[in-house]
Image 1 (cartoon, rainbow over the protein chains, first blue to last red):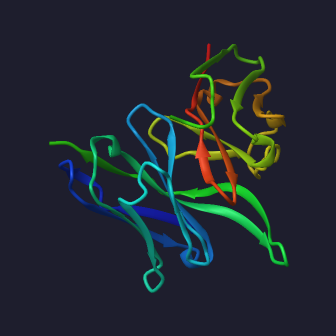
Image 2: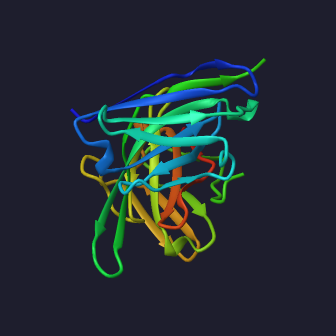
Length: 128
Length: 107
């Protein structure tokens, strides 16, 4: 069964750090584009970060320089290291698999099919 | 703030057609997806690549795009469709950006 299970959320004071983990089963993390998406209480979804199958990464402006996405291929696990946390980082954090078809060539073509697998989410609360 | 603009709420009567819009710069040049999220649950994709419907999603869900506005249409809306709907725009230069979400109420 294809599944994502997050862990590591909790209560942390402003300025603190937290490391989220996402264990995948039924597929290989390193062969896919993987994202973190968060949702503040009562708000919409907010894309946070992505790690591409090739290992490159991207971040939303709000977290760039504070958050680091990584993966452990031996454990088929995705991580999000969150430093210098702010009250506005309070949210449910979802681990997600982006379904992307890439046609190789001189100019690769990308076909995005959306996020097809979501975790159940882990709650991060930043408060003093 | 979101770079994609959605109406905060839309109301529809059962059996009628609901339309939810998503506006953003150069949207036609990106892949637009729509997600349905019910309370306490993770989102589910209902439309991808602007107009395509994943297997298992009812035919009453459809997507369209014109210029800088994408639209999710639910024909013959049912009570079970009451949920939050989020649009997402994706391209290789900006990864994923979400709209603010729209709460669909089936009256």
